[in-house]
Picture 1 (tube, one colour):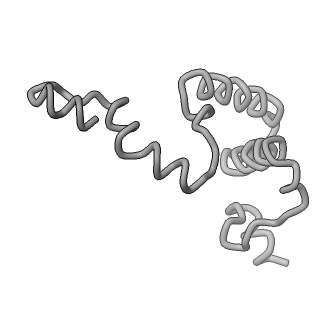
Picture 2 (picture 1 turned 45 degrees about the horizontal axis):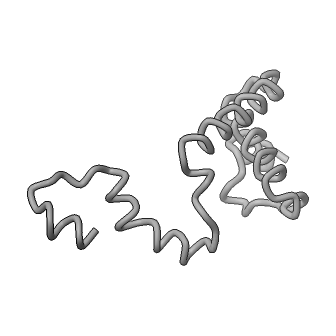
Length: 103
């Protein structure tokens, strides 16, 4: 980017260049992995996967509960070692909190 800015000072820095310049290295340092899922193909693949999960849990009436099921199942499929872990009580859905309060 230094070369680009030095030789083309009036040129616009497009969003993709900004992402590469300011966000890619910190991302790699923090997560120790590439950004494949953050690209267009990865996003489309993730969208298709989430759509399948939404269909799978379509019988859950409460929107928040359905979202929780979708996110939990996605997380377990993406990282099976998470199966069985419980979120902190502050992350429980509204219905779950209400049920715990009435018990």
